[in-house]
Image (cartoon, rainbow, N blue to C red; front, side):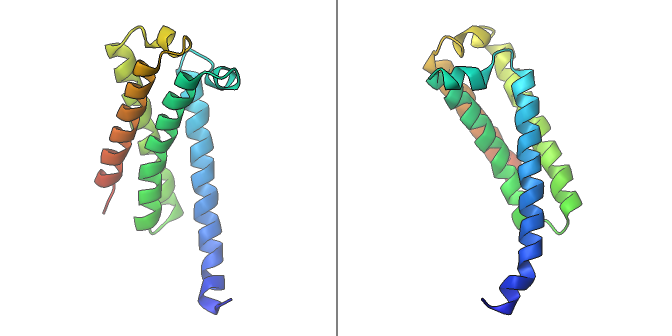
Length: 134
């Protein structure tokens, strides 16, 4: 293995670890903000819950990935990752406000609201990622 790859390995592992911690923290917060138990619903085969949660995770991961690609420090990654998480939670709350039935639709397995929530999460994540290019 080339020497420069071995020299980059510690930075890779550090950024990867911080990103995984950010992802876990986002997931923990998101699962506690939503009034339904996504993981239990997903285990029971609820595709709407899987769709909406997948959109939220990808919507969060896009800006985090962008920050990793452009960041100079782990602290910068952590700060911008926290910003990305807050933005995603706000996006969920806006959709929940706009669609009050969402809290019943997802547990009932209704796909249209789940797809809308997933697409809003992805769209917000994409815009968020673009704004974090510096």
